[in-house]
Amino acid sequence: MSMDTLLRVTDAVKSFRETRLSALRPPQEFFDFNRISRPADLNTATSRISYNTRYFSGNYGLIIAVLAVYAVVSNYWLLISLAFLVGGFGLINKFGADPVQFGDRTITQKQLYTVLFCIGIPLLWWASPLGTFFWLVGASGVVIIGHACIMEPGIESEYATVQEAV
Image 1 (cartoon, helix red, strand yellow):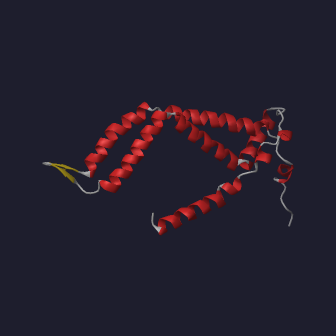
Image 2 (cartoon, rainbow, N blue to C red; image 1 turned 90 degrees about the vertical axis):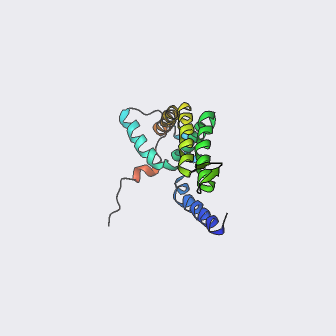
Image 3 (tube, rainbow, N blue to C red; image 1 turned 180 degrees about the vertical axis):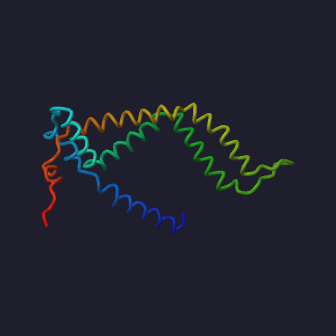
C-alpha cells in the first residue's frame, strides 16, 4: 500500500467518524429502561416513532449494519458467491489487463469477465440474495420500529418544536 492510499483511508475513517459516529447516542441512553412504556394509542406511537427515528438514527444505522453483516456471514453461499465475484473482479483488474497467450489461443480481459459472470451470477442467484435482503428489511424494521415505539422521548423533545424568540 502506498502512502497516498494510506492517507486517503485515514481521511475516510476520520470523515466517517465525524459524520456518522457523532450521531450515535450512548448505550445508557439507547437502553434506558426507565423510559420504556407502552404507547397509549396510535397517535402516541406514531409521534414516538417519528421522534426516535430521527434522534437515534445513528444507533439504528449501526443496528442495520450489524444485521447485514450477520445476514451475509450466516448465509455461506452468499458469502462464497460475493467473495468469488469481488475477488474475481479484483484479480482480473490486477492481472488480466493484458491478453494471455495459451498455445494458439489468446485469452482477453473480456473473456475473463464473461467466464466470471457465467459462473458468478448463477452462484449468486442460488445463494438467494433477495431472501437475505428481505430478511434484513424485515428484521431491522421490527427491531427499529419496536424500539422507537416503546421508548418515551426525553425531556428535550418537548422543546424541539419551540422556536427561540428573537
